[in-house]
Amino acid sequence: MKSILTLTVNGRRREDLVPDTMLLLDYLREQLGLTGTKQGCDGGECGACTVLVDDQPRLACSTLAVQMQGRRVETVEGLAKGGRITRLQQAFHEKLGTQCGFCTPGMIMAAEALLRRNPNPGREEIKAALAGNLCRCTGYVKIIESVEAAAG
Amino acid sequence: MNLLPDVRVHRPATLDEAVRLKAASEGARFLAGGTDLLVNLRRGLGEPAALIDLTGVADMGSIRRNGESLWIGAGVTLADLARHPDVMAAYPALVEAALAVAGPTHRAAATLGGNLCQDTRCVFYNQSQWWREANSFCLKKEGDKCQVVAKSDRCYATYHGDIAPVLMVLDAEALLVGPDGARRVKVCDLYRETGASHLTLAAGEVLAVIVLPPLPGWRAAYRKVRIRDAIDFPLAGVAAAMQRDGDVIAGFRMAITGTNSAPLAVDAAEVIGRRWDADAAAVVAQHLRKKSSVLRTTIVGPAYRRRVIQAMARKLVDDLWGEA
Image 1: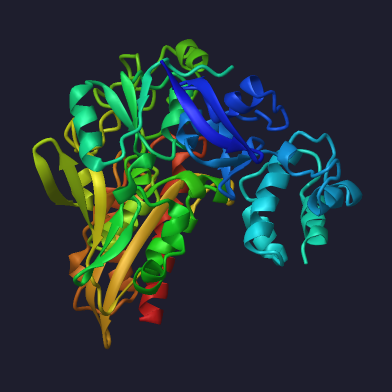
Image 2 (image 1 turned 30 degrees about the horizontal axis):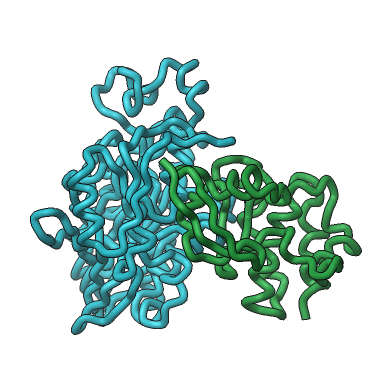
C-alpha cells in the first residue's frame, strides 16, 4: 500500500510515493538520504530522532510519513544556510555540547524548537525542553550551557 | 528499515468518515499521535488490518465551552491541552497531569483520546518479539499463561495513563461515537479491570470528546512517581478532588493509576462530613489498600509501589485540605 505524500522538507516542497506504514524516520533517512536524524532507542525514549514539524519537536520514530501530509518538516540538515551553521550549532561546537555526537541532532532540534518559541529561556526551561533527549556522554551540563550561550 | 505491517493507512477528514471506515474494515485500529500504538506495532504487539489516522479529523482538535461545561476534543494534543486558558483557569489538576505525561516531544504529538485509550503495560509484554518468544510469550499476546500471576486465567498488565484518574475525580464524561450514534459515559466506565481488553468501547466506537462539568468549590491535584522524572509512565499515580466546607470535608473523590489493569476510583465516602485528620486518613488508606492491587508488572518491585502510593495519597489530601 502506497500513497502520494506532499510536504515541505527543509524548505523544499516535495511529492513522494511512500509506503503507508513507512515511519517518518525511514522516509527521511532511507528515501531522502537525510541521515542527520538518528535512530536511537526505537521506542520514543531517547529523542535522537527529534525533528521539527511546523516548528514543534516530533519523534520521527513514532510518526508515520503519511501523517506529514501538507506539513513542514525540518531536520538538522535544514538549519545551516549558505554553508554557515546557526548560532545554536556554533554554540554546541564552542561549548563542547557534543561528544560522540549521536544525540546532537535531536538535542539541537529540541533546543531549536524551544528557542523559536522563547528566544530567552531560563536554565529550568532549557532542562524541561530537553527532558525527552538522552545523552550518555556529556552529563548534560555542557549541552545546557550550549543552549544558554545561543539564547539571548 | 523499520518495517511495520504493510497495511492501508486511511486519513479521514471527518468523524463520520472515520466511523464509516472503522465499520467497513474489521480489525482496523485508530491511530493518533502514535507514541503508544506505533511503538507497540514495531515490537510485534498487534496486527491491525488497517490504520485509521485521526490526526486529519479537523473537528476532533478543538476545545470549546458548551453551556457550563468544557468540551475537549479527543484529538487535542497534551501540549495544547496544558496551555489552553480555559483548562488552565478551571482545571489546573488536568494541566498538572498532562504535563506529567512523558516528555515535551511526546506531548506535542500525543492526544487526549490516545492517552486515555493507551494499551495496558507489563514488563513481560512491552518487549521485542524475540524477547517475548524466548520467555514463551504471555497471556496478553500469543501465550497461554500470565507471567505475573501464573495460575491466573486473566491478564494482569497494568494501566499507566496519567490523565484518566484526574478526569475521574473531576467527574468527567466521554462522548463515544459509533455507527449507531453517540453515547455519553462516565470516564470511569471506559475501563474494565482486565489487562488484555481494558477498554469498554464497542468495536466500531471512537472516543470523540471529553466533557468536563463545572466544579465550583472543588480543588483537585495529581501526583505520580516514576523512575526517570523527565519521561516515564507512573509506577503509581493518584488523583484526588476535595470540596471543603469550613472544618469539614463536603466532597471527596480519589482515583488511582499504575496499580491495576484499569484506573480505579477509590470510594471513601465515609470521610465526607468529617475533618481531615489522622482517623480520616486511616479510612482513606484502608480503602486505597483494598482497591489497589500492585503486582510485578514493572521493573520496580511491588513493595515500593504499594508504599509510595499510600505516601503520595496522604500528602496529596493533606495539601488539598490545607489549600482549600
